[in-house]
Length: 173
Picture: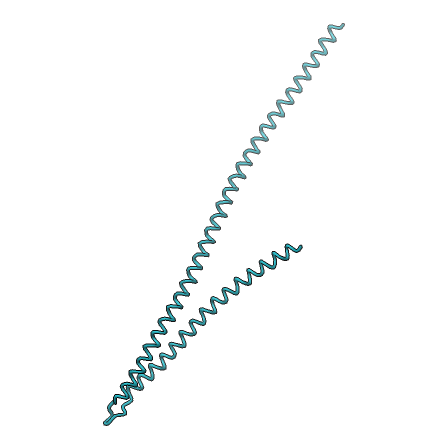
């Protein structure tokens, strides 16, 4: 009884552990996607600021000043930094996706190999069962043949004994 409780505990532990790891994986994936989406939203806002800074002309006669151009360049550099961060995060996301895909493929291949092994074992056992059935049928035929020979031998011996008794009884008279 205690052993069955132990087995039940282990099976539940591994089942919940597997479910938890899958939830953690999908949670990590979702967090990475959220991070990328936030970076893209930040980039969009910064890009709008860049266009606004290009339209800003604070100089004499409505021209851009060096300060306006520097501000536009700083915003543009922020956009480039954000883009680089987005690319890094996308690489992480794609690497994660590739890892998950590789795991799924390896589990699929493992399951296929296991199923192939089961099929191979089943076919082997079927072949052995058919062979044993054929041997059993042959053994039954041989047993029947031996039974017929035994019956014939017993009948022959009884006939001989009867004949010997009859010959002795006729000589004795």
